[in-house]
Amino acid sequence: QVQLVESGGGLVQAGGSLRLSCAASGRTFSNYAMAWFRQAPGKERDFIAGITRGGGTIYYPDSVKGRFTISRDLAKNTMYLQMNSLKPEDTAVYYCAAVFSREIKLVGNEYDYWGQGTQVTVSS
Figure 1 (cartoon, helix red, strand yellow):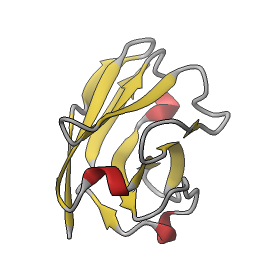
Figure 2 (figure 1 turned 45 degrees about the vertical axis):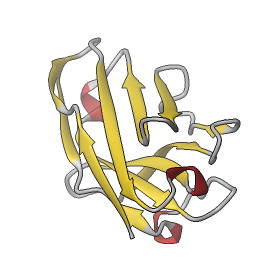
Figure 3 (figure 1 turned 60 degrees about the vertical axis):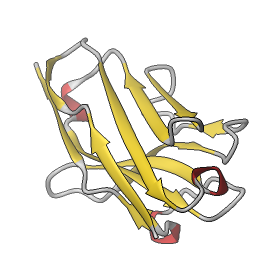
């Protein structure tokens, strides 16, 4: 089992920044590709960033590319999401997820473990 706990969400004005953290415990953190997803009210859960086991490969969809940065610290068993230039449409619950894989998965159903989510609200 892998336990994931997100933190760092909150209320921010448009154009502001937030950094989310995802602390992992349980199995070996470096065996898992990791990702961030988000889900806005009434919408589907969307993939927004992924990182491979060692952090050598990162992927973002166009919706956040250039504004969001994913990273992981293997020594701290923690993954991060730095979010800059936030927009009201970024408002959502943000989840971290882990999959026992060398590759980044873009579909949520392929992930093995999920955190409880953290709310991000961007005011205009």
